[in-house]
Length: 70
Image (cartoon, rainbow, N blue to C red; front, top):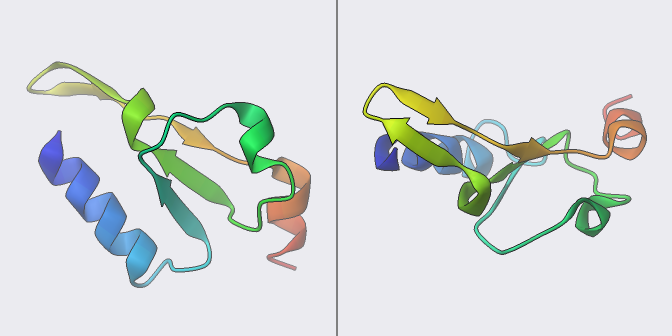
């Protein structure tokens, strides 16, 4: 799981900066109202069920995030 998180964090700070966000804080959906990112990866909500099966969570404000891409 650490490898996946590292790659996503790298993308959020690199080629997807401004589009993909990253958080490792405890958050809820209202924390992302009017967020300009299209997707915010939530490290603390992700789980690894085993070495080959992981659940990744990403938040978004579909109206505001989309509008920022137009």
